[in-house]
Length: 626
Image (spheres, helix red, strand yellow):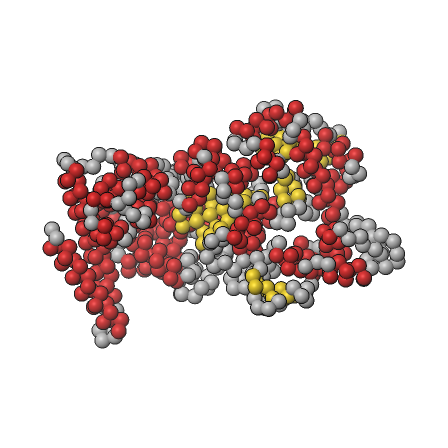
């Protein structure tokens, strides 16, 4: 810009701009006293909010890293703008005409505003083309995936015509230069001149968190198109694919409204559309790149300080999906949220699942999510014969490094308990192996939150492409006493749980199962509030997370190994008793080990002895019932 912007205009634009609105588009802010808001600082990694905004003063300050300034400073730092560009950005936002100190109207020359304008004009052009006769293939593509004209309009989906210069001609007619369109990534330079980058494709506008179009994603439609299946805008001044999440502009409001706040990360544009149309309005997707550290930073600012927030990743249950889970796990570690994984039935992604089974199946898929750590443990144990010493040892070696990287001591101890039960190993041995893995990998097992670097998953723990996750069936379950007990008990609970003593059933359902598939089924059964209500078992089966739902269906429908219904009920009651006995014996072993390590006359020692006595009394009652 030739000349200097009038200082009066600079102050006027700032006075007309609410700094909380600008910062609130990037950072989740909450009240922090009279006239003050706070959130997680966007300029450094933190878990407790130290970034404060004073709305009346138009000022922000971070008590953690010391960053502070006004609304112009914020835009300069967050978007790497010059001061002039920041003023121009806000003036354009409120429709204010800037003037120069020397007189006359100020003309924006940084180019960023023109890139936004060009992308906005291109989005309008593509939307208009979708209704034309040439776009029949695009409309058919969308219709075959369950998206009507209303859905296309909601997401701004359009069509790029097959010609070489349809967009180029339309936008140059609006006054955009070829250099501007090239800088925006809308056209490309070839040997024969400039031509449209996107041709003969379905087009999705990619918006930043504020809703401005910054680029496009395009899907091939025609067999004679030699280009890649998906084509995105190249890196530009305003489009950085590692920092963009498709759909975040639509999802951000509902992310903050959730209880708990939740982000669902899917793998493509159509998956985002399917989720939103199915009611999962917090779904987002990466744009032609893997989920990475910069995406984590974007989500951290949106989620804010919500310690109960959830991030749910959806992956195919194959080797590639497992590797994606590992990558996402390592990157999402620094999020102030709990990570989960949701796998669709039969490996269906949200778009295909909605098309095949309806909106309810998509929401059910997300709700049947598994904790990321539990998912990772399951993947490492998949394919191992836990009925053998060698299988259990290998399982412990594969999973211990994962647990060693859990920074939260309480959470780590709970997963050590879970792993010990899954493997049927002594808790003390599991903890020793986790400690050894921590020493090898530099993990955080000293009880200090945040003491270690982000987790690095060891090479030997990486899921192998040679061991894909396959559907678990009754026939494929290991033929070991422990698994047989759990399988028979789960079958009995599903078929005859309404016929046995409900208190005893509840007590048995509190006992964690060793086998991952049977544990998922036990958890679903346990979550049912009333085991005597008609239809509860079907609901339990439908709520079992994939890929274990088909096994639950087998257990519900397979013939129970008993000559009559009365015998089946009695057998189920006996299986309930055996599970409770197993749990008591396990807890007693742990307490007997603990009593050796604490002073006899200490309060902890007395509490251990009281608990041992209570367990003995319960065990005697169970034995007497035989």
